[in-house]
Image (cartoon, rainbow, N blue to C red):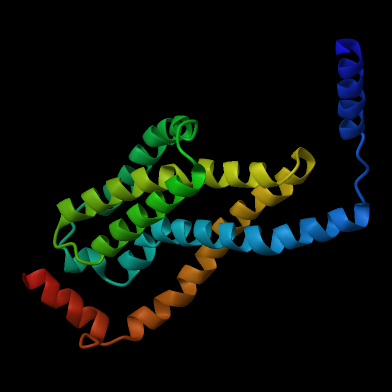
Length: 203
C-alpha cells in the first residue's frame, strides 16, 4: 500500500514538473505584467532620482543666496547624501530578509517624500545637511527593494531588461528636472509656493 502511494506521488510530481506552457498565453501574461509593474516601478525610481539630483536646479534657482551658503557648503551637502546612501544600502538589503518589500517601499517613499518637502523650508546650511542626510538614508533602500519586486515577478532571463528600466528612469529624471526649472524661475516672489514657504519659515 505504501509502495503504491509512493508511486502515485512520484508520478504526480513528474507530471507537475513537465507542465506545458502555451507560449502565446505566456507572452500575453508578460505583456500585462510589464504594463502593470514596470511603469509604477519606473515612476517611483524617477521621482526618487529627481529628488536627489534637484539640488543642482535649486542652486541655479538661487538657493545658496537664500540660505546664505558660503565656500564649499553646497558641495558638502551633495556629498553628505552619498555618505548615508552608501552606508545604509547594505543594512536595508539585510532588512529585506525580515520585512516584506511592499511595506518597506511604502516606508521609504514616505520618508524621502517628507525629507524633500522639508528641504523646501530650510533656513540655513544645517537644515541642508540634515535633509540631505535623511534623503540618503531613505533612498538607499529603494533600489534593493525595487529589484526584489522585479525578480519576484519575472523569470531569470527576463529580469535584466526590467531592471535596466530603473536606469532609464534615472536618465529621464534629468530631463524632467530641466523642464521644471524654467517654470520655477518664472514664478514671482508672491507665487503661492514661495508665500507659503516664507510664512512657515517665520514660525
